[in-house]
Structure formats: C-alpha cells, structure tokens
Image (tube, rainbow, N blue to C red; front, side):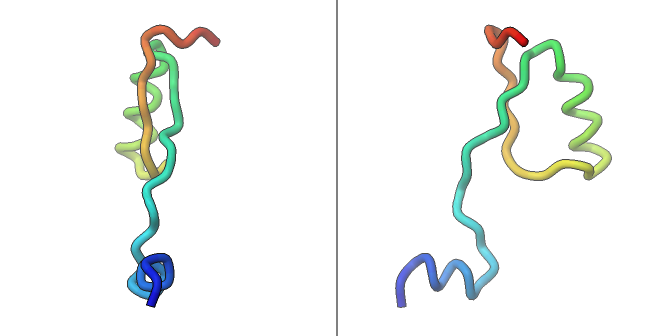
Length: 50
C-alpha cells in the first residue's frame, strides 16, 4: 500500500501550502479562523503589499 493510498483511506490529508495574507489583514484572518469560516494553513507576511 502506498503512503498516498493509506492517507486517503485514513482520512488524513497531505500538508499544503499556506494561504499568505498581509500583516494588516491579521484581525480579519483571526476572526475567520475563530468563526470556523476558513480552514487550512494561514501565514501573515509583514512585507506583502496588496
């Protein structure tokens, strides 16, 4: 059995890339996480310009 097949069967998902947000969006990102409206990895980048 391959690792990917075992992961699929057990319901474990492979690690993914984080969604990167500018540091100014931190309050909104935290609110979304607390409310359960978003999932996965999130990163705050202080140098990201939107």
